Length: 488
Image 1 (cartoon, one colour):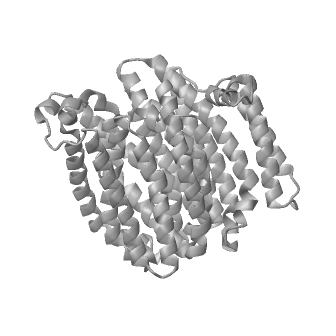
Image 2 (cartoon, one colour; image 1 turned 90 degrees about the vertical axis):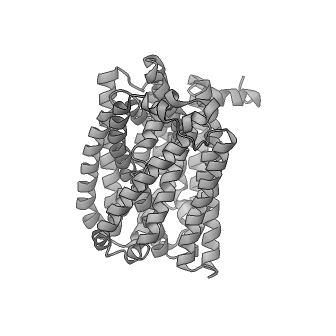
Image 3 (cartoon, one colour; image 1 turned 30 degrees about the vertical axis):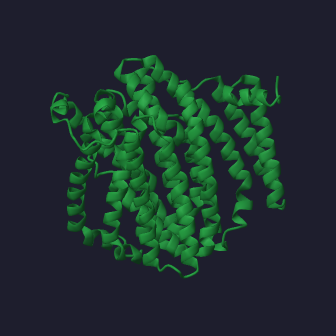
């Protein structure tokens, strides 16, 4: 547990530095390029990222669950690095063949987003790069080397994108140049990951086939197949709103929506940081039959993430008018979408690492079953709501789908594993959340955005600090207060 907390805190610090650059990008990019350009780049990334999950053929999940049986520092983990590259490349060849076979259907689906078709071939190459990065990130996580992955994903890529946006604005780059430059950032990320893994002796091109044949390949193949769909569905639900907006509306609406809901990403940074460490720990605990440890991680993740997420939720709501002062007027139509999506993000945090608890267990196939339902609900909701409510409809569909999904996971874990993540701390946090949000909502509309920000954030900080000191919800924060003699 101590290792989880330590690495999670380190990763969170790096992630929030990245979030700072993310917010700079959020503010600056709409002034550097049109909403149509922003939407095109988001659409290309969303589609590529979704397809990239298919290429490793489930090896990311296999790595997370079975790597403890493979790990051997003396011989480069039995050549596991080379095996990852080989299987991902085979999966890429299959996926690329299918993409080319159905490319006309894809292009027709996005006829309202004309830029999509222009970069279809480039996007396929980009997808392969993302697939390799995905599996190597998981490999690094399984080695408990997560800092470099956080730095590259949350800081390097965002700083690079910010620089490219500035260069593009001053016409030193064409639209094609921006796309190729953006791809180049991920190529650099991939090369740095390989170099880093090699530094730790984890890059070996000599596959120990004899060792891998000794494993239960039938079990591993079945798990990979199930988790291939599960991983694809998990990613799809994060981008399906943007992808379907590209079908019903156009790139400009995608740009406005993506920019506004991207603010909610800051809420999930602590979750992503903790989940990177918690996943391999949960996998190991299930493998050795330590159910108690799984329950402790599950409960800790919910308490910590709901506490931090609630603070960020209130801060964002208090700051929203101030944030929109720096965005073009056309982005105002995305404000309500932000409110709705922020609630769905908070629900994710409240329920902790529930997906990892299920997918790392012997009942992993249940995750796929639940995701089937989630995808069906999400597609139907988006098809129904986007044509009627536009941007707000996409946000409503996201809240509906994720709400049902998290509820079902909570009920399943409660019934099957006799675990639930809530405690009295959850009630204390929820009470603070209601009080803070009520204050923010009842502030006079005529109040200047800066004053609203100061009052809302200040009150939130004081209230949550008090409740944390009184009930010791997050002990690490109180230790920090004591170090600076802020409390006894």
